[in-house]
Length: 123
Image (cartoon, rainbow, N blue to C red; front, side, top):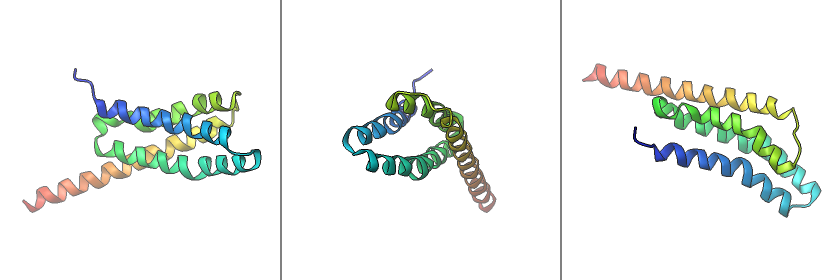
């Protein structure tokens, strides 16, 4: 079985996004601005990233089905390492990111399926 470098690179990008981004915020920002930036991460950047990984996996479901799952699964432990404590509310956010990612996957796969079907009907 040939290793898929695309999957490895996308999983590394998930790790960088979930671990390095909050670490940079906590190390460089003051306490008040860090809280605001963390809210932006939780409510803007991470949902958008979850949807983007879902869209990417929707283009090739057979190989990339694990991307939304990896994003949602790696979120609580990597974020807990960054803040040095485990907050159980992170699992709620993880479930939301999981749902967003797989809804985006299903929508993208459905759009691709209808495009291919329409193209085959024209030919």
